[in-house]
Image (cartoon, rainbow over all chains, first blue to last red; front, side, top):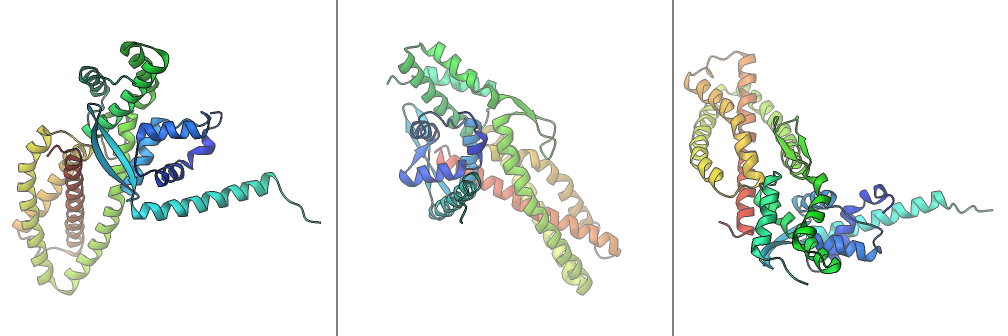
Length: 111
Length: 221
């Protein structure tokens, strides 16, 4: 995508939102889902994804499950109770941010 | 979609090890990601395993770029993706512990001022505790070294070296009975060492528990 910096601060929110919609997901699946939703516009790099996932896990928002799939170990992430609350909080924060940005770039002047 | 066979997976695993991705948890997670990308490339572009893996691994070069940590991790070089993990786990975990040790230092200084007897008992207790912890650590050391390494066992072994001089100082001070006749300055310094050692011990135990938890999750223990 043209300007990934715009998405950088929202990566945790994107991860939490995706995991809220599906019971559990693994790293590669998250990148593919984001690519699919944004029609390839947003590509999450592994260099940004894994530190974000591991931080959310360390903060207690995600829990991990390891399963053997296709001759290898697959690490699945799922939301914890705290993660569900954090998702609501982060989404509200992001919506507020979008509203503020819209107010700046598209101000409504009252007469 | 055709899946990679165990030989092909081992080939990627070996490349990851060669690139410095030595911690099994991160190695396995990246292996799954890279293998999924290779399988997709092989299916979509009808490429061979060799051509697909070369193309996919080329895109990962930035994450494998070596980086040096100038803070607590010494002069070792780590792949960027490992460096980020080490930084998050060591530096950010140590700050709260350092703060806690400063609070404990103040409490110990007050304790020494209020009742020297109780402070002395406490110093002996920490001396005994640290000696026991040191002996247990010596037993754990080979197990950590020979078992599958995690980011936490790596930090544990690395940071254990900082623990040894601190532990020796506390034990020597207690053994030589310097606690009784210490000046105010000496007792503050000794209190600080005692507090630091206690906090450091908490940090090492936390690392060890996290290491065990990973072994459990990956069903390796």
